[in-house]
Length: 243
Image 1 (cartoon, rainbow, N blue to C red):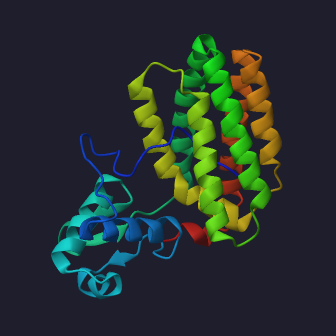
Image 2 (cartoon, rainbow, N blue to C red):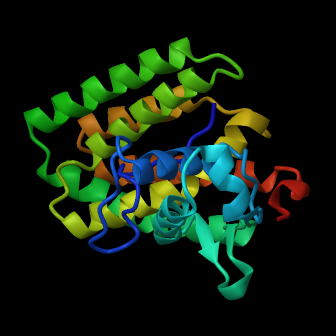
């Protein structure tokens, strides 16, 4: 099992001031279904998103679908190319390297601040989050979409708890954006499993260093943890990046 995670965020955090629609609205339902299909690879990178075809697939009108696609443009999961319409945003090694390096800078700084300011409540929060993540990982099996979704949520909660004592709301905001942008790469790594890895032990080591309030050690382990997923992505088949 492999991991890229950061401070969690709801969809549409890329667009400043934007508010994601709830799944109870037509736009919200179309948005969430499209986003899931992009993240899980059913709509491959580079795919042209033809409104006249997709409106039947997703059971909504053209106007509703265009609103949902516009939200996905704000999420940087879809690109609008003038008269060429909408396309799923391509992925690349270069893009993921940029995401990885930026995430290391921000998340390690946030973890350092949290360790410096963390109290008993913070310690209890990260222990509880780790326990929930460990339970979810124990239930995870190959090709288990529901199990992976649970693990993904618990993984996000653990990393969110680690940096929850960081006082910068801007750091947490940008961490959410990075998490969202990395999700497609993480899904590829989970499915392909290009290199062996013990993510449970990595998370345990981060937890232990954080509880010991050893910020230097915790940040080093966290940075290595993040880089490992980039190394895994580099071993993926090149045709996965064609779009």
